[in-house]
Image 1 (cartoon, helix red, strand yellow):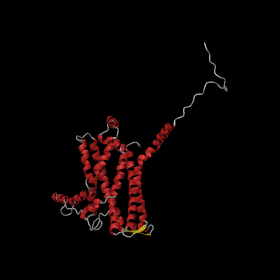
Image 2: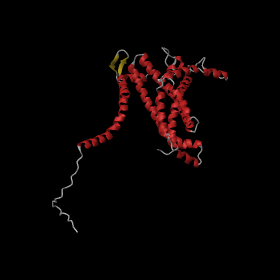
Image 3: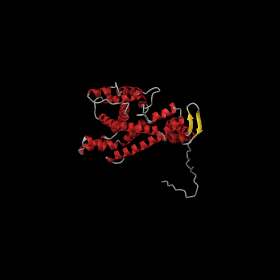
Image 4: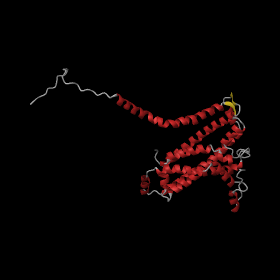
Length: 334
């Protein structure tokens, strides 16, 4: 029987110490490349969007701000530095405030019915309908139509003398409506055009949000005796809050920037009056275009663009807070 004795501490032994294997140069490179790939790749994947946004989003916006601070002509180009004179000149004109009123009026007539209709259509599509794909594609058809074509068709429908709407009103004994002569009537007509194009698009976005809600919540609510309407307001609306906020913000931005529909309404093409003979439906974008390209004053037009941006941010923030409050009233805060 043989016994082994451990060497005393501090004494050298004859047995060679185990060699620590150093990573070879090729493996070190692979490890370094893998770590660099994990750290850098996500930024590279999202970089194209931010590069394009910088070139075509932020850069034109700041350049517009630079133009707004100068006396700028379409032919002569950059002139003297005028500071905030373009802003004060725009804010001092009644036509600007009238265009702000028209824009907000059309926005209210458009946004509220459009969101209600989109929510209703999304709820119907979320049910088990036959040929569901067909109906989802059908509600998107107005969105793919050319906005100018939609504006021309609806302008004929809302014609003062030979329009289909007035003919139907006369058939049932109601008085005709002067769609192009009244501010309120013209705003309703333009809102109808905008809602026709965007309601189906918003409905599909809301439908995608509804289908992401766990069905267990609906089953639990049904077991508790909740009706279909109660489940919609107590489950669907609170769970749909992120999607609803997104739709409201995008709707706000789009409706405050409408140009094609009011530009084509009433057949006011070419060199005719912009936004009606008395500016009944002249929106901010129409006023911006008129000042910049008809009056050849790009500096003042750029100032209007920046004021429109501030208005969109303000209205979007208000809508965000309202939507957040409505969606949180019937459910727990997520």
